[in-house]
Structure formats: structure tokens, C-alpha cells
Image 1: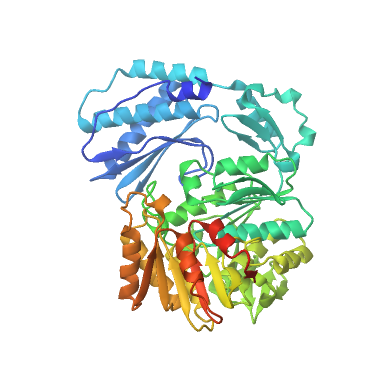
Image 2: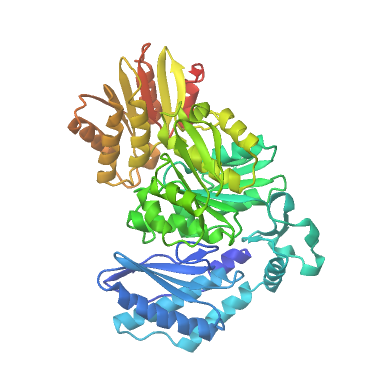
Length: 579
């Protein structure tokens, strides 16, 4: 058994069951998140009744346990949500497994109080905790973290390694070979410009745009995303790397000069953000998606989670926000950072206010992309010259372009590179796979998109609805963990495309608790209710795509909403002409 396994299994704690309270497994917080910007541990308690009573008990018992363990400097926090409360405590960076047991011990005491039962002997529980803390304590890591702070450079640590600095200014050591501060060449270590990019929709495209712009500036740019970790053209690994693990992988690569990190809600809530040292952070928008997890039940709470990126910014950092997104406008009032707004409208209130106050913003005016630096407005380029916008018709991508301009300026990239990067970035399977990729197939126009929630489906369907077509074909699928309401709403949004025929495809690897056929049945019923008569079913998206491709004739338009089997679909279109 290795050290981590030994720590994970060091203690087995139990507590009195409560009929009105269900708790999640405690999880480690390694960086800034929704609740605060401290490392530590958090438990989600789902409460039938007054969650405030649970929060009050947590505040008292967690404080008592922390003090008894010798952590009087650590803090306690609660966050009430509809149906429950997040229970958090902070801990030293070298004691995060111990923090789990501290949290569980505090909950043991809470449960005893709330159930009216006797807890275990307090002193014995504290003695057990101190034993685990002694096993986990890593004075060398703490000394290195303190020294890095004195030298104003970042530290990234995990179970396997610790690194100082980022990219070309980084050095990494195995966790068992941490040097003393005196043995570190601090002159060789430094951070690099880092951008965090989050949002419900558009974050992957914006991250890719920012990376393309940085590469146009001659920089070795790296990105993390829901698809991969990439340095230049070198893909380090494929998969969903929108959490801290992907960020550490990228920021430890000594080739990287600029890093653009896509960060998703799940990673922020599970572990927190990987660094406190971003130069700029962007929130593309906030819309209904993935609600009901970690105590995030409303769109307003989702905004709080995504806006956690502002905790990574220094005093002079820039937070890039969408003035066309009402949820972001409301949440921005709670953030004390310099905001760079972007909008499709030059007369949006936030744009007008920014120009009046002399703060940065970007907007669309008479077909041009404009950036205002606080004193001077610069015409960046005509929106039609950015291929990703489809001549300006894809307004959601116009917003992504505006966000990328704001981020790139904050990263210090010159205008020539910004315009070059935008002009060279195409909506194809190479530059932006899965996002409005267009192909010509048998004289028909075929669009492949990864849109998976109502907001993104509405955007792509509404954009393509204006295209002239003899016949329109649509394929759609949904993962099984979406609610019936969300599946119906997503189908209704897809009907904005005005299809003549539709294929409802199963996602066999993403049933997530549903029976086979349930989701296609919901899609088909919603489509029929929306007035569509021709509805077929397919066992997979790849089969559904082939069904549609076999029917296409010159002048037709097809929209394939491909949530899985994307590579297979691209392979079918390989011989087609990419637009």
C-alpha cells in the first residue's frame, strides 16, 4: 500500500444516521472555489427542514475540532442552498487528507447532537486525528510554499509532484524529493501569463481562439479543455482536462509561454481552481446546465460557481464578462475586480458605462469589432473577416471573438497577432472540432456541432435556420442524466432549425440510469409535439449520421448534433469537402 492509499484508509469514522439529513462524501479543496479561496475539505449536507440548524452545529463543532487538533488558524464556513448546506473548513496544503478526517469528525459530533445520541470520546478522536496528521505532514512542502511566496512565484502540488513557476519558468520535483529553499535557483523560476476561461457555452471555442492568437504572436501557447491538453501542436493527452489535473500538466511543461485554461463547473466545485495567479479570467455566459450537484440548484448559484475564477486574479487583474448575459450582469455586482465587458451592442448599458468611466470594453458596431482601452477606441477588424462568425451570422461566435479579444489584450498580445489569429481561425474540424464544423457532402451542406444544452442548441439552430435549403435534416441525442424537462426543451430549441426530417439517436454509453430507448422516445415525443412528422431513431449518433448522409441531395442542409461518435462522424465526412 502506497502513502496515499495508507492516508485514505487511515481512519474509519461513523456517525449517527439522520432521517432528515443526507451527506455527501467529504472532498478535498485544493484551490480557490465557489465557497472561498482556501484549501481544505467540504461536505454537502442535504436537509429536509431547517438547514440553518445544521450550519450552526457545524460552526461550533468544526471550530472545536480544529482548535483541539492544533489548527486554530484554520477557518470554518457554511453556504446555505435550497435543500441543504455546504460545510467547509480550511487546512494546510500538506494536510488535505487529514482535513477529510477532521471534517468527518466534526460531522460525527454534529450528527450526535442532531440525533440526541452520545458521540465517541472526544479526546480519543482527536488523538486519532493527530496521528494521521503526523503521518501526512510534509514540512519540506510547507517550507517551499512559504519560500515561493517570498519570491512571488506560484507553487503547484499534488500527490505525485510539486512545481514552482509555470511553463518556461517552471521546475518540478517528485513529492519525495522536495528541495530545501536554499537549494532552489529562484532566478530561473517565474510565472507565465495565464488566462482562465469558463462559462456555460463558448468556453472551449474562446480558449482555442485565445491560443490561436497567442500562437500568431509567436508564443508557444498551451491550452487545457474538455477535449485535451495541448502545447503548440503537440497533444499531451486527450480527454476532459478542464479541471486542476490538466492545468498542472500544462503549467509544468517547460515549453509553454502563455497558458489558456478552460475550467468547468465540475472541477471548480470538486477541487477548486489550480492556481491563484491568473492574469485574466473570462466568463462567457451563464445558462441553465448541470444543476442539482454540489448544492448548485439555480442559475444564480451556477453563476457564483463560475465567477470563482475572479479569486485567481491579482489586484490589477482583468475579469472579462458578457454584457449581453443578464445573469453575468447581476453577479458582477458582487465582484470587486476591474471588469472588461463585451457586447454585440455598442449601446449596451455596461459598454456605455465603461466608456464613461474609462474602463476597458469591446463591442460590435456597424459590422466592426471595436476595443476600447479606457481612453481610445480601436477598430480591430470587420466581423466578416473572422471566419468563425460565418460572416457575422453566428452571433454566439461573435461574442466568443469579442471575449478572445479582451483576454488577448489583457495577456499583452499585440494587435497584429490578434487580427492574424482571428482571421486564420476557421470553423473546421482542425481548428475548432465539434463546433459548427461545415462540410459539403453530395452537394449538401452538413454542419457538425457539439451543442448539448438549450442555450447552445438554440444558438446553432437559430443561426442555421436562415440558410436556404431544399430539405433540412436534423440529428439529436441527449445523455440520460438530463431531466425530462431539459430533454424536451433541448428538442424544442433544435426545432428552430426548421427540419423536415429528424433522427433521434441513442447514446448507449451515456444512459446514466435510464433504460435504452427512453431518451429517443422523449426527443421524438417533443419533436412530434412541435409539429414534426418525419422522425426516425438510431442506435448511436454514428448510425444516425449515416442515415441522414445517405439521404442528402444537392441543396439540402443537415445539422448533426453529435455528442458522441464525433471521430466516426468526421471520418464519414473525410472525403467530403470541408468548408
